[in-house]
Length: 391
Image (cartoon, rainbow, N blue to C red):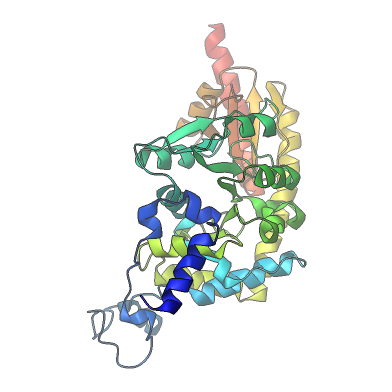
């Protein structure tokens, strides 16, 4: 070893480990990611990847490029998404290097578990039921323990209880905001407090429905302040692009984002998805239409909430920060849910098995015509159930 190498080695030993270096799995930290020639060269006569040189059999010119693998780095998409989010929150500048692009938010959830939680050990995640089901599903798949700290009956975040349960074995705390099925946004002050006090792990703020809130409610406002915060977002909800499966993880911890890129499959986001996402993010007209749709959804949500609250058999309609409503019936919610679907062809979601959600149904805010059909079928289902019980 040269004297220069020796000095660098001593300096590295004295340098304190970063959060990622302290809590990520050692095999992940030492992983040499898959590389291909396309990482370095993307133009010219491309004979490196054993693709079909005669092209796609599809006739249209725009489909011809599908014979090539998509860009493994998605730099154009990351840059466009960073620009879009930065324009919404003027005091925060998101950079492309701080963004991971994945197959919906679910890929990011799975990757975070695989990076920080070793299977079949005491490593665990913490969730706050009732919450999004994929946190538990991914943990089960990866054989990772789950610590559950329930929300309050009003769906508030119990900060002290969470921190008390967050032992050194807890690597990730998942906070869904706005919540699913609760529809309630978590105040960013609460997320900030978790980030300040949970210093030996990662706080993951899952913001699938954040575009139905005000920009100041997003945890992106906290990204510059905390290296232990990851914000998940998606184009499935407000953007109306659930079919393309495109999601993002954003963090000021660029080392963490780089590790996510190292662990992902080489070409995780397909060309059609990235093209469509980029078309949306780079078109002012399309973005204006998206915002118009959000405004219509919010107006319909107010109308639907009033209509539900006026029904005598609806006990409670929970306040909503999302594009859906959670409401409670006097009884027979599961029967009403099934009757609406089987007879009225109106499909909602029965949530009565979730904590604090007894006799609850979740309904997406639809178009005016869909909402009218839903309300009609809900009343018909309720009347039918009561008639059956009175016989």
